[in-house]
Length: 313
Image (cartoon, rainbow, N blue to C red; front, side, top):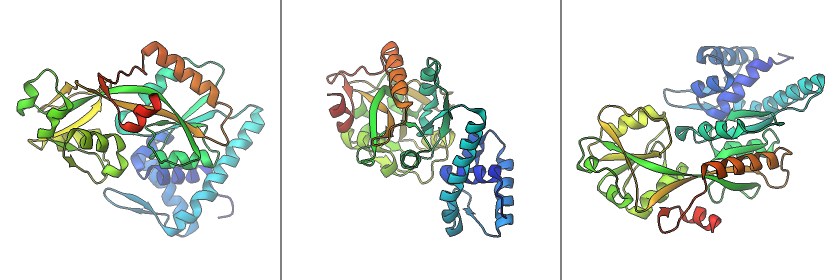
């Protein structure tokens, strides 16, 4: 195989970054079957297995690990070649993560008000994947939840604070209240979609308000998370208040107050090598945030994890 097929490499890189065929296919705007066929063809031409596949996981083999960086470089070279022919700058790539909370809700609002800047939105597995893409110069910025200690290379700015609601079984006595205090949830168990180490906000919420945590293994999506909550008489979880949600039978959503927990969304970029699009993105998020009052925070009324509150102060 002297001349690699860029479509095959693009499918391989997407699955390697997402660790999930469905999310990778969605990112590429192709079917999951097409993504799988492209990678199978690539493995056949190379004569090696690149991915180990399981019911709830996708992992890179040693050969896949060796291919990943050259594959990314080949795709970057392909994009540069197309841009050179078209004599136009490549679009600025904005990677988003935290897909359970639907970050694209905010990004769509912001990008609808930007003029003179072409932005390409990509889906990343997590903050570490975004940081790696920024370090390689593949992305202009990222949008999601920044966590303290995420690396010295990253600069970030809080751009949205979103209240969260509690989701709990309709049969639980707490479901009779119109709203709940965070401390009320200490009578329940906070169901997590993954391990606590990957869920900074939920872990800190549980610690602050004495809510026991019930970790998950693999993040299998919102429907799976809600099914877990529904199956537990003392289960609950937290979701952003503005997340469009069709509440399944057997569950209720209740707002939280006294205090109101706020989930902080951030824009991140490379500190030493900021992309030229970063100032325009920061302005667009700030302007939309002012219109929508995204950064309202009252210490006596609201709750933020310590690092977020310190940044606002």
